[in-house]
Amino acid sequence: MSIPPGSTIGIVGGGQLGRMLAMAAAQLGYKCHVFDPHERPPAADVAAGFTRADYDDRSALKAFGAKIDVATYEFENLPVEPLAVLGDKLHPGTRSLAVAQDRADEKSFIEGTGARVAQWRSVSSLDDVTAAVAELGVPVVLKTRRYGYDGKGQAWIRSSEEAGTAWDSIGHEPAVAEAGVKFDAEFSVIVARWADGRMTFWDSADNVHRQGILRTSTVPPRAVIAAQVDEARKAAAGIAEALGHVGVLTVEFFAAADGPVVNEIAPRVHNSGHWTIEGAFTSQFEQHIRAICNLPPGSTELAAPSVRMDNLIGDEVHEWQRLLADPHAHVHIYGKGEARPGRKMGHVTRLVTA
Ligand code: AMP
Image 1 (cartoon, rainbow, N blue to C red):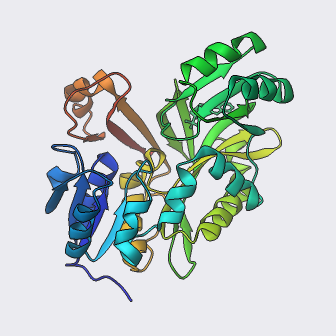
Image 2 (cartoon, rainbow, N blue to C red; image 1 turned 120 degrees about the vertical axis):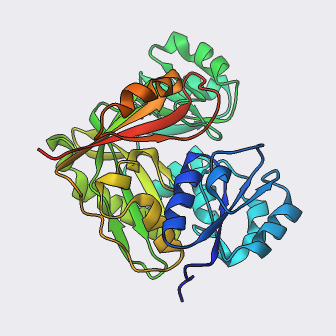
Image 3 (cartoon, protein in one colour; image 1 turned 45 degrees about the horizontal axis):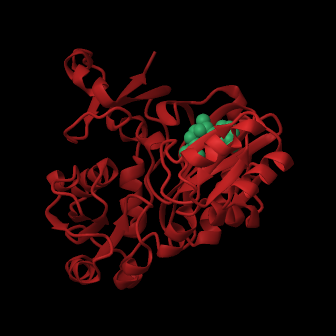
């Protein structure tokens, strides 16, 4: 059964991903209702309805659930248990969320599907960290199990003497210690899965990060990545299937010399897929709406021979006049207010047709 246009889609989380989901949903004739604790989140500006409440406010979630026909979420650091009040209206379900929000559970889960991750240890004391460094060798990266994103909650250990400082810098939080992977490139596989198991994939983007933050995504990717896409898609499909995921799922990979290594998963649309808005026949946002409403899949083919997306981080958004002076640049500004350093404020996509 499909959820027909005219219905209301609830979006938990009101950031830029929610905003772009709401815009794609509107094109298909849906109304969106955003649920977020902030005063004026970016998605609320483009949605038909908005509930301002904490993510663990069960009565507010219940009232929200009564107003919507289907619900989704746009980020993973949400308390899982309260979302249960949304029942089977929620896609993807809480399992995808629970697995993705704890780095140790995530790694065990991924290994269980047969995909590869960097060698890792779960750590909860300085002794654990020292032991992990002794076993894994340096470099090692410590990542807090929960609430890390864009390189936050991470510290590198490049010699065993740095273990204490790194442990201090992540605030002695339960963490994973991960062996540094030698990689030639980073890429992502974005897959959309329907409840009946159908899946679609976009071309894998070649992702360049700086200080843990995505800077650019380019398709098609370089040959070192292209050679690993088939294997990476199989891994991503296995993860989506094992989660029973409905909607878009992103799997980030390192292209290592001996094949793809999963870095992490996001149970949602992803920054490395923003290029699909103009660069593919169907964007990740539209496809997510199609999947959760059980509409037919759209084509994910490229709309141009090559596409490049640049993020606008912090102050870079203030260059909007210069960016708009290029009549072929697709400029997206998220309406976020203060351009703090490291904050994702917008992005620019360019289709290369020559
Ligand atoms: P994450 O928040 O886990 O996506 O990490 C942010 C970025 O740090 C990644 O995109 C990589 O550039 C780098 N990084 C994270 N983990 C590792 C690792 N195990 N080996 C090498 N680089 C890493």
